[in-house]
Amino acid sequence: MERVIPNNSSTASRKDWQLIEQENIKYFQFKWRNNLAIYSTRYGENEFLRKFEPVFLKQIHSDIIINLDSNGNRMGDGLILQKKNFVPGLKIADCLPVYLFNDKKVCIIHCGWRSIIKGIVKRAGELMGDYKYCLGASIGHCCYEVKHDVVDLFNKKYKNAIVLKDQKYFLDLKSAVIEDLGNKDLLASLDLCTKCHPEYFYSYRRGDDKKRNYAVITRI
Image 1 (cartoon, one colour):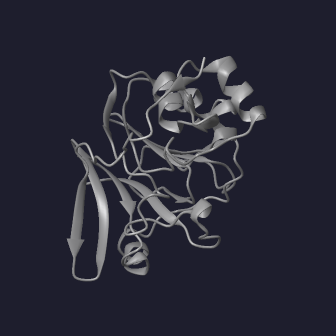
Image 2: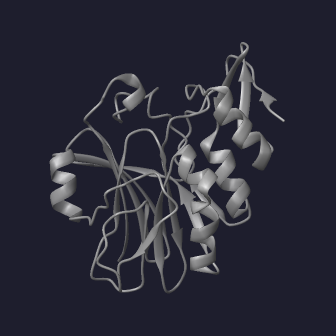
Image 3: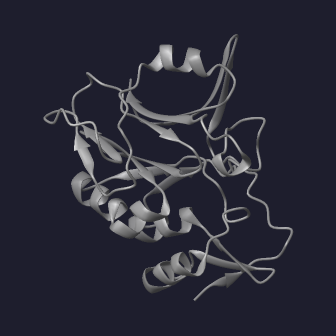
């Protein structure tokens, strides 16, 4: 079920995300109606946190999505809310942040391979009901080499998530998420690989063990 891609494949397009550059901060932003999906860069990370003051979780690679309107728990891998009191945020090493919107609610989920297999993406879609969504940056299938245990799990559930290249297997996180949420509701994708672009992002697989990127969702 794996697909084969050529060696010169590139994921270097932004697709409707904008790079916001201010005096002491740079970040990517996508706007849909009165909703903002935001992804930090390594330039001005402290200013980013002061500007948006996000609420973070202790992320555990789960399918748990916390309702910030009614639940004080801070352990899981997704946040959903209807009120405007909070700015939900995630800390990203190389995994994929997914931002979901409708006219009443916003949701943001942290999608590594474990959370996807556990069903966090489908759960987010169910909790939102009608939705549009966009994808942030993550490690791309150019760099995300995985072993046979992960290959087997994704081949059982997803048609195009495993890429075969030079006799090695790579995981396409975005392909799996799109398969779960549907292509027709996808608004935009920040198609920059976190490992390939050190000018913008930290990457665990590149050696940034303690540094993280930040993904937040808010309404204006």
